[in-house]
Length: 265
Image (cartoon, rainbow, N blue to C red; front, side, top):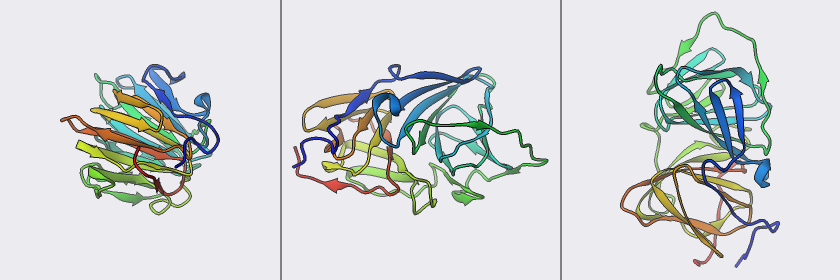
């Protein structure tokens, strides 16, 4: 059985509040979970918090971006297409496509999980303004324009392990050239995946409930947006031994969600 990662790295557990902090704009704070600061390879994930009424100026990236609303209310404009996001809705935007994120609540914060297929993200402000915007229906799920919108309420669910329900947010088969794969996992009581490893790095953020992360060497309890960086080749699994459901966002630095199962440990 594989006893460590392919390049000697071990898992890193990142409690919220321990990551690198950057102010993207006044009232908008980004806390890096996985990225160059903890030696992730081709993967960046973060929690971004918008104060009430704040918006991030329209911009582009030379790489894709995935945006999932965790709490609050939000509008995302992609070129001239406008989306209203509800909790756990995801929008994934290809490289070089202009977009803008808005917290449209006058009194509440909005919190997002973001992911990118690079260790160090880049951003360029865009000045383009459209004469009119098209509001995409709240029940629309799939490709609209160049981006992919996944509505939590309507998304297809599948079993990835015992007592689980998984939703794919993005991968090569959903949006060509996106350069990463990922989605949302729900673990019911005693839900778990088989012990496994990947040929690429993985970020797992516990967005609700509590989880136990098990590697061949250690056991961790994660909750409250704590995030595990699992390096390529390192066997691991997650289990929910608790009565309350556990929700996670998982992101792979690989175009398709491929795993190699190993004997339990």
